[in-house]
Length: 110
Image (tube, rainbow, N blue to C red; front, side, top):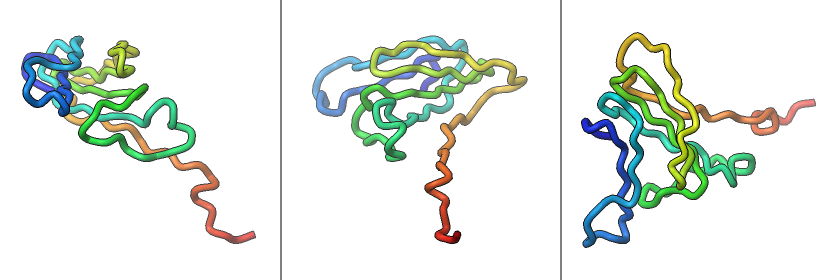
């Protein structure tokens, strides 16, 4: 996130080239936090986090801002999905919740 109201990604394999590989614009205030959701293609089978050195394929991204909103994006096409409004002050952190299935919490009893 940044104070120019945009979210920028750089491809680490292009260390010596100029320019961003992806820019998301839509907030009207400083962007305070970003959080990658699970990969859409593996959301039902895995809770692994994406590698920090790459933009995950078919992932969801939450961004939050001083404009009092949280926005949901679909990557890698940068499709804006939804804006969550109603906060009365800056939103500094937004995170995807980890949801476990009942099978994940089974303790082995009858």
